[in-house]
Length: 249
Length: 249
DNA sequence: GAGTGGTCTAGACCACTCC
DNA sequence: GAGTGGTCTAGACCACTCT
Image (cartoon, rainbow over all chains, first blue to last red):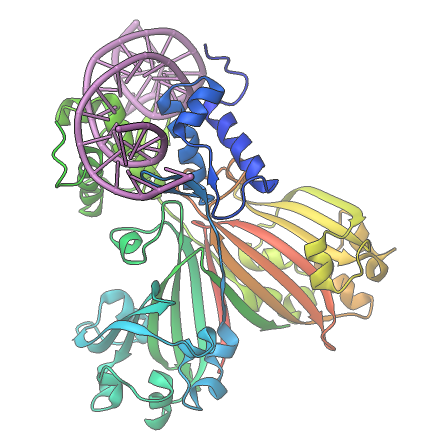
């Protein structure tokens, strides 16, 4: 049966479905033909039909719901302007940098604050000797009740000891406003961005469908003199965020 | 045979393999047990063994080579500093912004330059009336012979007509240096970054293994007065790039 | 040539939703 | 209950690498 000059059957079926979706024949949220439809219409076995649908699922184009079918996925992007959220006028005035994105719908869950020995990677960035302590602040950010971001922030213990930064609620303006109170206002930030597939339980925690990558951001806050103040590791739902950066020539 | 309180067999096998890789039992580049090994060791059918290996492949943890086996993937990141590459001192001095990343190993392939009617999306960003013309410059960037980035740049036709920008070779410093020559030096850039799975032939063109997301960047160059000069759409191998952005508070 | 993964078929039972 | 996708088995032939 195979005629191996063309793409395999399951790819041809996937291509046809993808083209139909791109033509608008199936709108976001709508159901596309299921396994049984493909078996009948293309005369293939069930596994081949399943393979075709898996291609679209792994491309992040469709969502598969057991007992229901395969549906065209719908996106709504959350814009995230790094420059606006990190400008002093945002956190200096008592707004959280998170609220800068969410238009006043800030929400965090499972805030967890703890003093720990600095992980090697973090110690290296912060310039802390091996075995030095940091405060770790972990949180899950929600958008419309949905978890969309995991965030873990590390600050040198000797810098923040006794400050509200060691409490779950840091008060208006968040960590950066408190660093200002402590006489160490952040002057510059660096964000390092990677895309990868979710690992371990990230897909479950962020409720990511198959075929959705995550964006992994490591942000370092620097004082005017170049001293690193904070490292923040974030894992975002890669399909939900549009990261915006402004750069001067 | 199914005992559906635990994870399915293929997931348990995948979890065991992943754990072994994380423990270092299989080093990057090394081969992990193949289909026949899993069939024998776990007493499952071939499809189930394949399903297990597919999980790791789609997580981007392994690479599958036909006729050879499944291998732990190895990464080497290409740092890409947006601020450095876009600073006037880079392109103003005749270096390509691409070379800013590659430490003097610039290379592009399949440069394609053409005047076209502006796609609606591009016209909107550039502030061009419907039906207006742009020059489109498409290229494939290589790193060590491997394609790692697709780039398509759009410039208003009335701005660049007659300039080297309409030629495949723009000369030293590239498009931005030529815009400077034309009296329209870029003053600011905005990059919008998304992560997604490759679609259509992107995986094939970039030679991406399964489970590798792409980073999709839309960069707009603005003149001092805020006029948009250029839109550049880029698709990068998400596993190979580390995007770096510097932000002032 | 032996061994590997790629594609494909034809069946089975199960878990879930309600098209 | 009918229909959906999830898991699983047991075969087959093909394309590719050389583990």
